Image 1 (cartoon, rainbow, N blue to C red):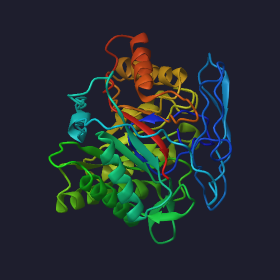
Image 2 (cartoon, rainbow, N blue to C red):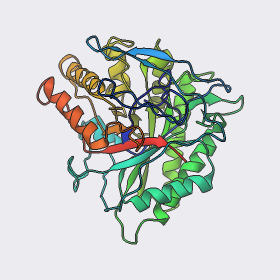
Image 3 (cartoon, rainbow, N blue to C red):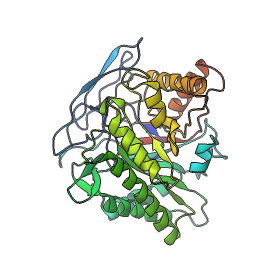
Image 4 (tube, helix red, strand yellow):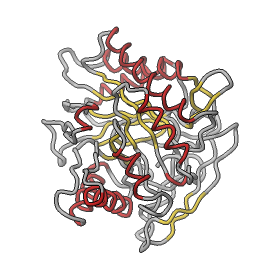
Length: 392
């Protein structure tokens, strides 16, 4: 839940995603200490900015039985602002990943890492991007390869935007980046990833081009979604031309949060545009439910962007037990009202050494238990974990 209609104090974690635009709130670089009564609140790295303005705060009801949690987004990071502390990298143990294909998602047959169980799975690192510098992204890719973890990596490039000439996003630095620049940056990440893999490695990642539904600054959300899909396809072609396809596949991702688009219209249009492009690439929803079904969006709306639309699969933000329960309730509705399983691709967390938030494996366990509490066989959650943080 990076950039939730306001800076949210949430825990991130799990699958590596490169997305554009999510942040939690409070002061930049400062995490709220966790207490026994408020272990669900975390601070986010950088805030989305629209024309240089800081995001506004919002209050979100976690559920009818839970207390209201006030979420406020942090101010945009300044050049001298501290970057969030990250956990020290551990010695990597190669882990084989099997990224999902759109065809598998459509039939509900989500690919799972066949050599990894939920108890031993390690998380990829997803990032809130501040730049499209190819040198910086290449270094990021190299670091990811050195960790020896395969799976889903989301690079979040921020809020959808248009500069009068081209579609793109506002990065977490507040600067505009056009779609072509973003594609070039992602290719650089892939090149860095491949170049730093050990010889003979079979490790692979699904590299997702991330954005959000935070108040899109675009003239046409449908066109923004369509172009996002075409750039995802373009990256896939470039990966093939550079001989990278064995280790990196192209995907897209969207940090979808109901409180950012209460009418649902612009989110719906972006998704429809993505689908209409017909590229066949997975679109991961790595967002939240902001209080659950009926709090902001109804069941039909939430299901559409979480699993109902062609190509979509969910990598939910699981920062606390309440968030897991909200997703479990949605999965129950999907099975019994729409007679379709909710397509999970993994879980996301926002854990750092400073916020002591929920860790990726714990988040997966909590979600699995929440699903079991609403009925057996409601949905499966692959042991694909990603933990998101601000890029340094």
